[in-house]
Image 1 (cartoon, rainbow, N blue to C red):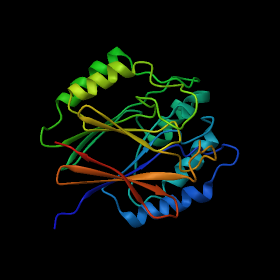
Image 2: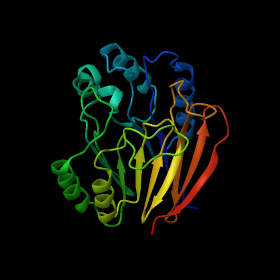
Image 3: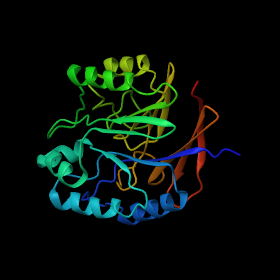
Image 4: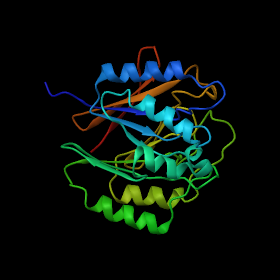
Amino acid sequence: MEEAYTIAHLSDIHVGEKGFRRDQVLKCIAEVNVLTPNLTLITGDLTWRGLYKEFEEARELIDGFEQKPLVIMGNHDAYNLGYNTFEKLFGERMIQYEDDQIFLVGVDSTQPDIDAGHIGRVFQDHLHEVLLKAPKEKIRLFSLHHHLAPVPNSGRERDILTDAGDVLSMLIEDNVKITFCGHRHVSWTWHVESMLIIHAGTVGSPRLRGMPDQSYLIIRIKNEEASIYLKFIGKKEKLIRKFKLD
Protein backbone atom coordinates (compact mmCIF):
# COMPACT_ATOMS: atom_id res chain seq x y z
CA MET A 1 0.00 0.00 0.00
CA GLU A 2 1.29 3.45 -0.89
CA GLU A 3 2.36 5.40 2.18
CA ALA A 4 1.10 8.90 2.90
CA TYR A 5 3.34 11.90 2.35
CA THR A 6 3.74 13.35 5.85
CA ILE A 7 4.49 16.94 6.87
CA ALA A 8 5.17 18.10 10.44
CA HIS A 9 4.21 21.77 10.76
CA LEU A 10 5.58 23.65 13.78
CA SER A 11 5.54 27.33 14.63
CA ASP A 12 6.29 29.97 17.26
CA ILE A 13 9.06 28.44 19.36
CA HIS A 14 9.78 31.79 21.10
CA VAL A 15 13.17 31.13 22.65
CA GLY A 16 13.80 33.85 25.24
CA GLU A 17 10.19 34.61 26.13
CA LYS A 18 9.37 34.65 29.86
CA GLY A 19 7.92 31.24 30.62
CA PHE A 20 9.44 29.68 27.46
CA ARG A 21 8.64 25.94 27.44
CA ARG A 22 11.96 24.42 26.43
CA ASP A 23 10.78 21.09 27.83
CA GLN A 24 7.83 21.06 25.43
CA VAL A 25 10.03 21.96 22.46
CA LEU A 26 12.37 19.06 23.28
CA LYS A 27 9.42 16.66 23.57
CA CYS A 28 8.08 17.93 20.24
CA ILE A 29 11.44 17.34 18.55
CA ALA A 30 11.56 13.80 19.96
CA GLU A 31 8.01 13.11 18.70
CA VAL A 32 8.79 14.41 15.22
CA ASN A 33 11.94 12.29 15.08
CA VAL A 34 9.82 9.20 15.83
CA LEU A 35 7.25 10.32 13.25
CA THR A 36 9.96 10.52 10.53
CA PRO A 37 7.97 12.88 8.27
CA ASN A 38 8.85 13.48 4.65
CA LEU A 39 9.10 17.19 5.47
CA THR A 40 9.33 19.31 8.62
CA LEU A 41 8.33 22.97 8.31
CA ILE A 42 8.78 25.72 10.94
CA THR A 43 6.83 28.91 10.18
CA GLY A 44 8.69 31.50 12.20
CA ASP A 45 9.11 33.16 15.58
CA LEU A 46 12.08 31.07 16.57
CA THR A 47 12.97 33.79 19.09
CA TRP A 48 11.32 36.37 21.34
CA ARG A 49 13.32 39.54 20.53
CA GLY A 50 15.60 38.49 17.67
CA LEU A 51 18.69 38.53 19.91
CA TYR A 52 21.82 36.63 18.90
CA LYS A 53 21.82 34.42 22.00
CA GLU A 54 18.18 33.52 21.38
CA PHE A 55 18.97 32.53 17.80
CA GLU A 56 21.91 30.46 19.01
CA GLU A 57 19.66 28.53 21.39
CA ALA A 58 17.05 28.12 18.65
CA ARG A 59 19.74 26.79 16.32
CA GLU A 60 20.86 24.31 18.98
CA LEU A 61 17.30 23.09 19.49
CA ILE A 62 16.49 22.79 15.79
CA ASP A 63 19.70 20.85 15.23
CA GLY A 64 18.03 18.15 17.35
CA PHE A 65 15.75 17.21 14.46
CA GLU A 66 17.10 14.16 12.69
CA GLN A 67 15.72 15.53 9.43
CA LYS A 68 16.73 19.14 8.75
CA PRO A 69 13.58 21.33 8.82
CA LEU A 70 12.70 24.11 6.42
CA VAL A 71 12.60 27.33 8.45
CA ILE A 72 11.22 30.82 7.76
CA MET A 73 11.26 34.02 9.84
CA GLY A 74 8.56 35.45 12.08
CA ASN A 75 7.95 38.99 13.26
CA HIS A 76 9.70 38.40 16.59
CA ASP A 77 12.79 37.23 14.71
CA ALA A 78 12.94 40.55 12.83
CA TYR A 79 13.57 42.63 15.95
CA ASN A 80 17.02 44.00 16.79
CA LEU A 81 18.55 43.24 13.38
CA GLY A 82 17.44 39.65 13.84
CA TYR A 83 16.96 39.25 10.11
CA ASN A 84 20.76 39.48 9.72
CA THR A 85 21.33 36.92 12.46
CA PHE A 86 18.74 34.62 10.92
CA GLU A 87 20.63 34.63 7.63
CA LYS A 88 23.94 33.88 9.41
CA LEU A 89 22.56 30.93 11.37
CA PHE A 90 19.72 29.60 9.18
CA GLY A 91 20.39 30.82 5.64
CA GLU A 92 18.14 32.48 3.10
CA ARG A 93 14.90 34.11 4.26
CA MET A 94 13.09 32.81 1.16
CA ILE A 95 13.06 29.06 0.71
CA GLN A 96 12.24 26.86 -2.24
CA TYR A 97 12.01 23.10 -1.99
CA GLU A 98 10.75 20.28 -4.15
CA ASP A 99 10.86 16.51 -4.20
CA ASP A 100 9.00 13.92 -6.23
CA GLN A 101 5.60 14.96 -4.81
CA ILE A 102 5.56 18.59 -3.64
CA PHE A 103 6.81 22.04 -4.66
CA LEU A 104 7.05 24.49 -1.75
CA VAL A 105 7.91 28.18 -1.59
CA GLY A 106 8.40 29.93 1.76
CA VAL A 107 8.73 33.69 2.20
CA ASP A 108 9.77 36.20 4.82
CA SER A 109 6.62 38.24 5.46
CA THR A 110 8.18 40.33 8.25
CA GLN A 111 9.25 43.98 8.49
CA PRO A 112 12.07 45.07 10.82
CA ASP A 113 10.96 45.89 14.39
CA ILE A 114 7.20 45.84 13.77
CA ASP A 115 4.62 43.09 14.08
CA ALA A 116 2.62 43.67 10.89
CA GLY A 117 3.32 41.47 7.89
CA HIS A 118 3.71 42.52 4.26
CA ILE A 119 4.88 40.94 1.03
CA GLY A 120 4.53 43.72 -1.54
CA ARG A 121 3.82 43.92 -5.25
CA VAL A 122 7.38 43.34 -6.48
CA PHE A 123 7.82 40.24 -4.33
CA GLN A 124 4.35 38.99 -5.29
CA ASP A 125 5.28 39.22 -8.97
CA HIS A 126 8.44 37.24 -8.28
CA LEU A 127 6.52 34.57 -6.36
CA HIS A 128 3.99 34.38 -9.17
CA GLU A 129 6.77 33.63 -11.66
CA VAL A 130 8.30 31.00 -9.37
CA LEU A 131 4.99 29.23 -8.83
CA LEU A 132 4.17 29.25 -12.55
CA LYS A 133 7.37 27.27 -13.17
CA ALA A 134 6.38 24.54 -10.69
CA PRO A 135 5.87 21.13 -12.33
CA LYS A 136 2.15 20.60 -12.90
CA GLU A 137 2.19 17.09 -11.48
CA LYS A 138 3.50 18.27 -8.06
CA ILE A 139 1.38 19.64 -5.22
CA ARG A 140 2.07 23.35 -4.79
CA LEU A 141 2.58 24.55 -1.22
CA PHE A 142 3.25 28.01 0.21
CA SER A 143 4.42 29.10 3.66
CA LEU A 144 4.79 32.34 5.58
CA HIS A 145 4.61 33.43 9.21
CA HIS A 146 1.71 35.89 9.19
CA HIS A 147 -1.89 34.81 8.79
CA LEU A 148 -3.84 35.45 5.59
CA ALA A 149 -7.28 35.44 7.21
CA PRO A 150 -8.57 36.18 10.73
CA VAL A 151 -8.19 33.27 13.15
CA PRO A 152 -11.10 32.53 15.53
CA ASN A 153 -10.52 32.26 19.25
CA SER A 154 -7.29 34.25 19.10
CA GLY A 155 -8.40 37.56 20.58
CA ARG A 156 -8.76 40.94 18.94
CA GLU A 157 -7.72 40.83 15.29
CA ARG A 158 -4.37 42.43 14.44
CA ASP A 159 -1.23 41.92 12.38
CA ILE A 160 -2.94 40.17 9.48
CA LEU A 161 -0.83 40.41 6.33
CA THR A 162 -1.45 43.96 5.09
CA ASP A 163 -1.75 42.82 1.46
CA ALA A 164 -3.54 39.57 2.28
CA GLY A 165 -6.21 39.99 -0.40
CA ASP A 166 -3.70 40.36 -3.22
CA VAL A 167 -1.62 37.44 -1.92
CA LEU A 168 -4.68 35.19 -1.58
CA SER A 169 -5.74 35.99 -5.13
CA MET A 170 -2.26 35.20 -6.44
CA LEU A 171 -2.01 31.88 -4.59
CA ILE A 172 -5.40 30.69 -5.83
CA GLU A 173 -4.61 31.78 -9.38
CA ASP A 174 -1.31 29.87 -9.23
CA ASN A 175 -3.05 26.69 -8.02
CA VAL A 176 -1.43 26.54 -4.58
CA LYS A 177 -3.22 23.81 -2.64
CA ILE A 178 -2.03 24.42 0.93
CA THR A 179 -0.67 27.53 2.64
CA PHE A 180 1.05 27.17 6.03
CA CYS A 181 1.00 30.01 8.60
CA GLY A 182 1.82 30.59 12.27
CA HIS A 183 1.73 33.79 14.34
CA ARG A 184 -1.56 33.57 16.29
CA HIS A 185 -0.72 30.57 18.53
CA VAL A 186 -4.05 28.93 17.64
CA SER A 187 -4.43 25.91 15.39
CA TRP A 188 -7.03 26.49 12.70
CA THR A 189 -7.83 25.73 9.06
CA TRP A 190 -9.69 27.72 6.40
CA HIS A 191 -10.87 26.45 3.02
CA VAL A 192 -10.73 29.37 0.56
CA GLU A 193 -11.87 28.37 -2.94
CA SER A 194 -9.41 25.67 -4.07
CA MET A 195 -6.85 26.22 -1.28
CA LEU A 196 -6.52 25.16 2.34
CA ILE A 197 -4.92 27.60 4.81
CA ILE A 198 -3.38 25.91 7.84
CA HIS A 199 -2.44 27.79 11.02
CA ALA A 200 -0.19 26.05 13.53
CA GLY A 201 -0.28 26.81 17.24
CA THR A 202 2.86 27.30 19.34
CA VAL A 203 5.36 24.69 20.49
CA GLY A 204 7.17 26.85 23.05
CA SER A 205 5.27 29.99 24.07
CA PRO A 206 3.20 30.06 27.28
CA ARG A 207 0.72 32.42 25.52
CA LEU A 208 -1.70 29.73 24.34
CA ARG A 209 -4.75 31.96 23.64
CA GLY A 210 -7.25 29.46 25.01
CA MET A 211 -5.51 26.34 23.65
CA PRO A 212 -5.00 23.71 26.38
CA ASP A 213 -1.32 23.08 25.63
CA GLN A 214 1.55 23.60 23.21
CA SER A 215 0.92 21.86 19.90
CA TYR A 216 1.87 21.30 16.28
CA LEU A 217 0.21 19.87 13.20
CA ILE A 218 0.70 16.71 11.17
CA ILE A 219 -0.45 16.69 7.55
CA ARG A 220 -0.76 13.41 5.67
CA ILE A 221 -1.32 13.49 1.91
CA LYS A 222 -2.53 10.40 0.12
CA ASN A 223 -4.70 9.72 -2.94
CA GLU A 224 -5.12 13.47 -3.62
CA GLU A 225 -6.49 14.10 -0.13
CA ALA A 226 -4.85 15.90 2.78
CA SER A 227 -5.70 14.90 6.35
CA ILE A 228 -4.76 17.46 9.01
CA TYR A 229 -4.14 16.31 12.57
CA LEU A 230 -3.74 18.47 15.67
CA LYS A 231 -1.04 17.10 17.98
CA PHE A 232 -0.84 18.44 21.51
CA ILE A 233 2.66 17.60 22.70
CA GLY A 234 2.62 14.36 24.66
CA LYS A 235 -0.98 13.55 23.64
CA LYS A 236 -2.60 11.58 20.83
CA GLU A 237 -3.11 13.32 17.50
CA LYS A 238 -6.64 14.37 16.54
CA LEU A 239 -8.03 14.63 13.01
CA ILE A 240 -9.38 18.16 12.45
CA ARG A 241 -9.96 18.30 8.66
CA LYS A 242 -9.85 16.34 5.43
CA PHE A 243 -9.30 18.26 2.20
CA LYS A 244 -9.45 17.14 -1.42
CA LEU A 245 -6.48 18.42 -3.42
CA ASP A 246 -7.96 17.91 -6.91
